[in-house]
Amino acid sequence: MSHPLLEISDLQAWYGESHILHGVNLSVNEGEVVTLLGRNGAGRTTTMRAIVGLTGTRKGSIKINGVETIKMPPHKVAHLGLGYCPEERGIFASLTAEENLMLPPVLAPGGMSLAEIYDMFPNLEERASSPGTRLSGGEQQMLAVARILRTGARLLLLDEISEGLAPVIVQKLAEMILTLKAKGYTIVLVEQNFRFAAPLADRFYVMEHGSIVKQFVKAELAENMGMLQEFLGV
Image 1: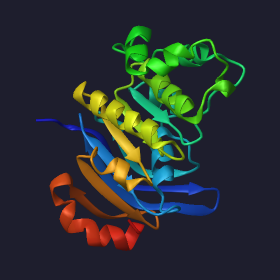
Image 2 (image 1 turned 30 degrees about the vertical axis):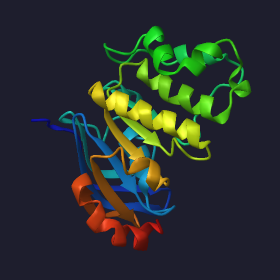
Image 3 (image 1 turned 180 degrees about the vertical axis):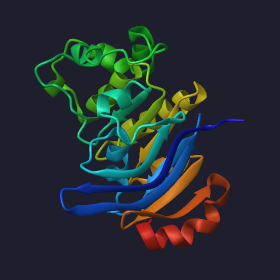
Image 4 (image 1 turned 135 degrees about the horizontal axis):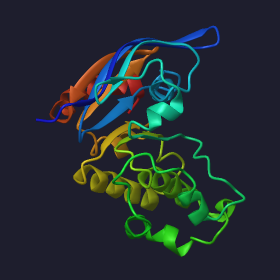
């Protein structure tokens, strides 16, 4: 039986005076793909940032593999094997694709080798010596994900990785997630693209106004479509 790799209890978070998260409770089992659904402003990205430690004040409990992290700085959280791919990607324009790829430190043993990464993302091998700004949006997104795979992180937080990309690239990213799942990675997706997320996720959490309002498993997707249309307009 898999065990919870990520456990969040009564998580509250603030940006300055703004109270964004209001008692979020969720868990992600080892090897699962879990998707956070919700409208823009529902608190999904703030939940991801709070897990990493990038919000202002946090209260509650965030356990990664049983270790309480609510008081930890972000670099300590990362060393527990967590990789975060933010929506803005963070590609360094002055570095080549391969230099970007090699930039983060190794956090834990078992990270992918350069050869394994290039096998998964052949586009990146072709563009290895190209400056970061010369990469297409899809190539930049692949690079942003590939960077954290080299570090040894096994819990991946992926924020809107399909946004604004061509369908052929979105399909490649879906194949990548299924490949990573088969390798035993644990993945939390924040996605506005429901058609992208639905076939990939084992479980779904729906957020509204900084709280979890519904959770269900893949087998219950059909019976929850009416609710999702109400919350998401899908």
